[in-house]
Length: 304
Image (tube, rainbow, N blue to C red):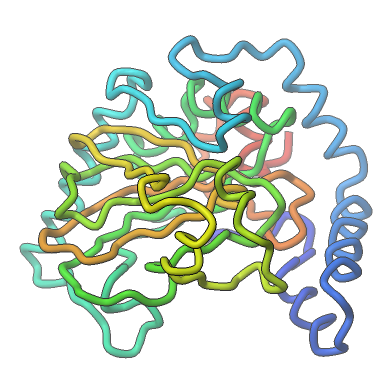
C-alpha cells in the first residue's frame, strides 16, 4: 500500500518484534494500543466525539449489521458506487488488454486471489475516492464502530478460475482487531460459479469453538460439525452490489472453486486503536485534500 505512517508507530513490526520475545498476544496488543495512544494523544477520543450526531444513511441497517456482523445492500444504496464500478471495470479491462492479468506461482495466494491494484494507486482515481470517502460509507462505518475509523486498505482483487481449497479459501477470521469492517463491491456479476464471498453471521460463527490461533484455517467438516452446511451465506449479485462484513466476527472464505472469473473491490475500515492494523496517512493530490471534510481527513489520517 502506497501510504506512510502518520506517527512512526508500525503495529505489525512491533507485533513481530514482541512475538520474537515470545510475549503472549494480549500483552503485545496492549503494548501497541498504548504506543498508539502515546503517539497521537487525544486522537481516539476525538474520533468518538466526531461520530456523535452523525446520521446513519437511510439505506443501511446499522443495528442489523451490529447484530449479524454482515449486511447486503442494494445497488442504489450508495450513489457513488456506479462510477466506482465502471472505473474499476476499465482498470481491469486495460490490464487484461495489456496481458497483465496473470496468476503467480510464487505469491502466497497467486493462483486464486490476485491483487490488480491497491492503496493510493486506486484512491488516486477520483471516482474511486468519491466512493470510498462517500457520506454513506463513512456514516455507516463510523456508526458501526462508534468512532470515526481508519481507512486501512483499498484493493482491487481478481479471482481467476481455480479448483483449490487453501489459505483464505478455508473458513477463517481476520485478525487485525476484535472487530473491523470490510466493504465488498462487485465489479463483475457474481453467482455460484464465481467463487462468491461466503460467510457465517456473527451468532452462527460464535457456535464454532474458538481456536488458539486467530489466523487458523478451519475445514468445512469442522464447521459443519457445529452448524449445518445451509448456515453459510453467499454474497452474490450484479456488478455494483455492496456488502459490509465484520471479518473479525464472521467466519468466512472466498475465491473457491471458480469456473468463471470474479473481480471485487475491497475497502477495509479499522478502529484507530486496532492492535494489528497500521495507521496509514493516505497521500492524495493537494487539490483533492482541500475538498476533504473533517471526518474524511480523520479516515485518511491526515493532519487538520
